[in-house]
Image 1 (cartoon, rainbow, N blue to C red):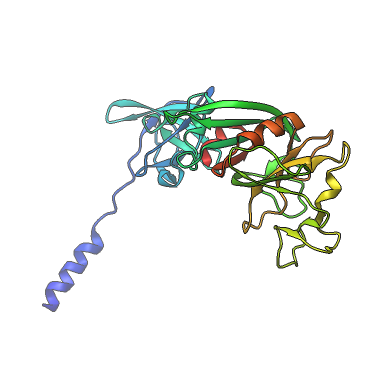
Image 2 (cartoon, one colour):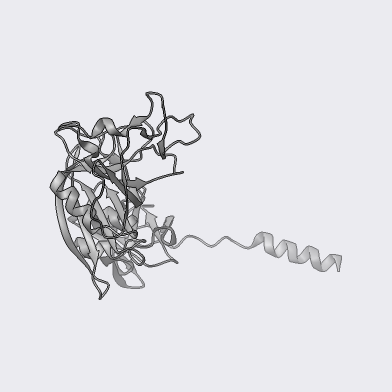
Length: 312
């Protein structure tokens, strides 16, 4: 038995390694930018490895981690495999900047309709209303309210120009002046009036002792509290129900980011002439219409550009 084992070992050692298979590909050419998504979960994107006549596939991103996210194609090449020319696109992903070559057959074009993208949001199945906020300038955006039809399609029932954080939409933290990217439940509305018409979402009237707690050291951080006193790190809500331009909280809705460690006190509220500290602001008339349509199953998704909706 020992002798047989030795012979087997020698055979394994002298076996030559399989050489990497190489392919021919055409020069890269630029194309008109097109956005796609993929549902493939078994393949990868590939980075360029070798020259045109000796190109090898070297995987760099697993597609199962990017299902239903947006890929933007900017270049193309043809790779000859088994005598056939196969079209590959150079793509860039909006989720985290991943890029690489991908076979065109794994890609499906994204319809330009924002309604189609809203229907693919993770919350679309359970939501009745979805608000999208798509950045259009350094501190400006377009807000749209989408309501679900009986046939499960989505229709746009409100469009409003808005101001956002002075640092735009992105990954926020306390004091960053950035509107938080992503999807958030719209948990309740609040404002100056005793009563406001809604479609089911809760409403609270601001009292003289109403505060939004924004002190990181406070155990009630990022919540509404009625207190006798709170330090100046917290927002005294009634101070923002006065005459314009200090009437932001005449009417507002809470973007519930509780527990996400990306800042506090994010609302959709009444607009004035300035950028916000991270909230989304629209005109009083648009705010009243928005609140009148919101139910308990309403969400907001804030993104830097429309196709980024597919990441959420």
